[in-house]
Image (cartoon, helix red, strand yellow):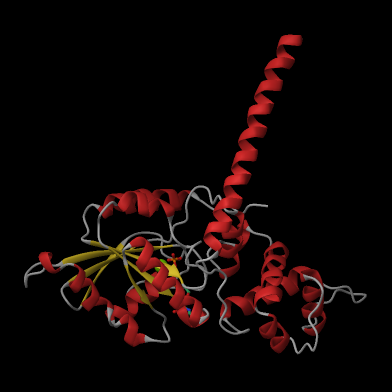
Length: 309
Ligand SMILES: Nc1nc2c(ncn2[C@@H]2O[C@H](COP(=O)(O)OP(=O)(O)OP(=O)(O)O)[C@@H](O)[C@H]2O)c(=O)[nH]1
Ligand SMILES: [Mg+2]
């Protein structure tokens, strides 16, 4: 199943981002360090052309440090852009940003010229929090759910820089189904557009395979369960998510599991490494080709049927 979330306000915000892009000197795209591939807006790469860009790997406190370092090396080598790992837990990294912006725009810098930078990224990735940290006060609204910022806002920070805060945006069609699950599991997609059990099973499958020790430690297990469903059942029993008669309340167990993953309660987790990109793109190409073939066949047989009538 594919999860899609592209409400009207996001469509409007995307159009405004394209417009603002021509007025700013630089773009700061905030990626989620747990999913640098899936949180990278494919539309931005197309519209930014040669405008300077910094990609932040934010919420790095929730990601696997070794894998985040691999992503930094990979993005800088393959995209030719500057990256910075940031999180609210490391304010000194956030404070490097004004200097980095000035370094990337030496020609545009003189003492009277204000530098303009636009901060963009998926919903709930921490854009407004970052801006508030840089401004030293709570100017823009933040919150632990997607779609908090609904319109653009400008904030002046030190170093003669104006930052444009923008609403979090996704894109009209998330082609890779794994990406839509990862975006949902990490909290970028509104709950009403998703199914808790479905997301929790996806996450459980991944964690059982890639982070078995964290699962064992968090839920006091000596042995791993055989399946994602079994893990949810264990969590349900452990946390008392039970209906009358002792049956597991799976939706409640799933919600609880997702809340713990999102808060980093199990420990730092990365859901993607640079190596997965190639394999997933190949898988996607095969799926798309099959869909094309099916479409062509339907068209052909439809025409034939009409002729024989
Ligand atoms: N663990 C962790 N949480 C963070 C970090 N940065 C922000 N958050 C939390 O993430 C949530 C979303 O933060 P916001 O700053 O509102 O995110 P946003 O990108 O502006 O979201 P929208 O405006 O909805 O697009 C809040 O609960 C923040 O406290 C971080 O570095 N680490
Ligand atoms: Mg915001």
